[in-house]
Image (cartoon, rainbow, N blue to C red):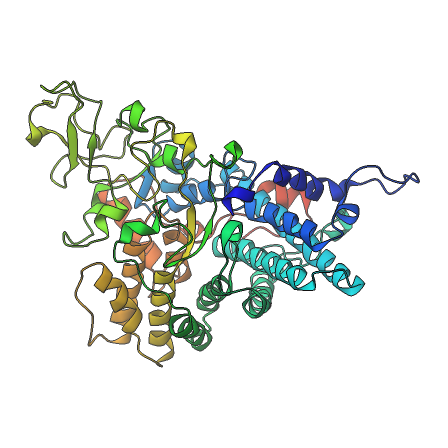
Amino acid sequence: MKNILNKTIIILLCIFILTPMACQELEENPDFITRDNFFSTAEQMELGVNAIYDGIARGRDGWNHFYNRFVFECRVGYQVGWEKGPSDFQNGSVTSTDVYIATYWRISYENINRANALIEKADELREAGIPNQELLNRIKAEAMFLRAFYYFNLIRYFDDVPFTDKMTVNDEDLPSNQDGKRKVLDLIESDLTFGADVLPDNYTGNDLGRATKWAALALQVKAYLLDEKWLEAKNTAEIIIEQGSFDLFEDFAHNFDVAHENSGERIFEAQVSASANISENHNHHSHFVPADLPINIGGQGWHWLNGTQAFRMKYEPVDKRIPGTFITEYPSNRVGLNADGEYPMVRWSGNTSYNLSRFGGLVSAAANPNDPETLVFSNAWTSKWVQIGIANPSLTEKNIVYLRYADVLLGHSEAANESGTGDPYFGINEVRSRAGLPSLSNLDQSQLRDAIVEERVLEFAFEQETYPELKRKSTFGGDQDYLGDYIQNFIDTYDLDRQLSPKDYVLPIPLNEILGNPNVQQHLDY
């Protein structure tokens, strides 16, 4: 699918954006492209759904769908950054005027509106009996999957959000967020049920990367967990486990490299490829790359984000996920050249100084380039999104992985544990076995719940899943508060001037939405 990302998408984005603003008073026959006069065949509809896929990758924003989630993730305190956006979130200083929240919200609703428009048009064309009905039905199912995907992530962060399953054309169509989370969950269940029935098991050639039946089912598992429909989540996960022919990669790092894209346990991922289209690059490398990596091997970038030393130390030394999660060594230009005339290699250490400043975890500038004992760093730079060795970080080819088989396995364990049915150890022990960790057994329900939550954190670190997953399982001031425990530990470990509050458990609805839509109410905590 990387090869079909081209300028056609930009044209289609304009169609979707401009259609609602078309003037109704003009009597002349239009000589321009709109949704109504362009989408008249199944093949044209396929180009339309490609544009909706584009929104979960690079899209048209520097602060894109995935990058904004980088920033939100800093609220937990295991992933931190020195730039204002990440810093505000890790310090609890988040308001409804936040630019990352506003951009994420706009991207999500733009693409929900495009999906709504495409679904409506698909129904029109189906009734008209156009050729290639099978493709048309698949396109509708893809649009429904993508609508569910955008909506699912919105309610994970914002809870009650404005709900509509119709294309918004004018101000009379402004949706309400009353009972928005409930309405969205019901729509997601319906959309993904349709998708699982219609979408194919797999694709080949240029269609690799499109949503499959398994992607619909995997997202359905996550939605059922959010809705606390434990039995439905367990049963859906078992369909994937028993019928999907999925296995975990032996090497955890294969989940994030270019060589294994759209294969193995990688169920759904956004396609990123500057070689296919220069506008389809991504900025994940530039934000996570070590600040002292030499420029000629990919060191260009902003270096805004990394993990804390304390978080890196949560992993058992034998955990096989470490090389696929963290950069353990790299050449540094922060100190002079060594005796061989090269930048010396620095290695991670839990026994050297660390603080939250921009340079607080780098190798000391006074380190001896010829003394390995001094060539240590304490930042937990992640390897998941960084490509050491590339000449230009804007040319990264790494896809953005959104759904993995490990998520299904841990979802099955959680659902089995909460419902008291099935084998709650199967999934988590599969994940732990791949990591080289011992199997769990003989835990009570509460202990196993804790173990599953912690396994999720370690498995999906830096994949922008930790904040919404901890939030899902937590209540401020409640007996079960995994998110609060993480944030409080971060505050205590690094002596922050911050206090845990109810605001940490939900993101504010953007101020622009509140001012522009009288049907939307802000969360009481804001």
